[in-house]
Image (cartoon, rainbow, N blue to C red; front, top):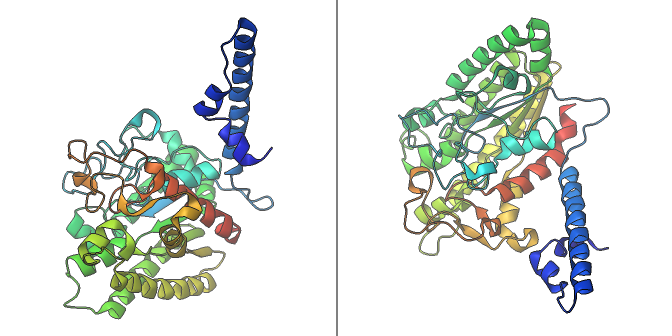
Length: 388
């Protein structure tokens, strides 16, 4: 059986087409067929879910996943931070999560943090460290410390009113203390050294602090500003290493000039990608790649991995039909050209699109769960062995 034929059988249209009502026997046979189809569909769905799991090399194991950075990975740390507009704990955010409840994730459903731990078989959702319902046992398998609106540049978080990477590092130290209290020092140290740590930042520095507000333009040109970002990124990795972390994935910056809001702000009448922002991302990424290589050489027993998300996301944008997408220049929420965080809300008149699976972006800044899932599967398959 071809895969597409099997999936087609799972549609209500296929089932209805095969029902008949001419006599009692036919009706009975139809229901038997329907039962068989539903049973087979469950097997297909289970198989697909299992296929998404990542196999670790040899005897390798991951005890926990801990993630720092910005809104790409934040799962709710800004929910009770009323100093910032960078929140998403209200509808229609989270409409495709279980129960359709907004949790502070900046998407229609799961975000990369969740998809990573799910693919590794650790747990389904990676909780926010500041979640008031967080249980002590949750700390054993990791948390998200990232805050939407943050960046490598401390000014980025300051302007947004959110936790900077320095603040996130303080929270990580608190996390370690709590972990030692729960698990004991020896086991806690083992968990930290065997965790996968991801750092996801830089997008807000380029798009907001440098280009949108221009707050750094008087002091820095693009090359010198990306040097500033790089210095903060490098120091942050070294600080993590000093706290016992040994496996660190550092994601590069995406093609920020192609997200819907930046097309609207800087893409002209036709809302093309803003190449100035993309070029700044590429320049920073090239410097980050070289710096990660140096860190690997200079931090004993470490695995610092440079992870490219620029090209995977750009491929989704440039070749949407290859992945089953139809809309790349607008988000699903509202008009899709400017709505993000507070502007993407339940009362804005445009509502949401009828089928977010056709959209690369959920709002004007953040991808949909489906787009995230494709990117996460790609990066895990490509980079997971480098951590061991």
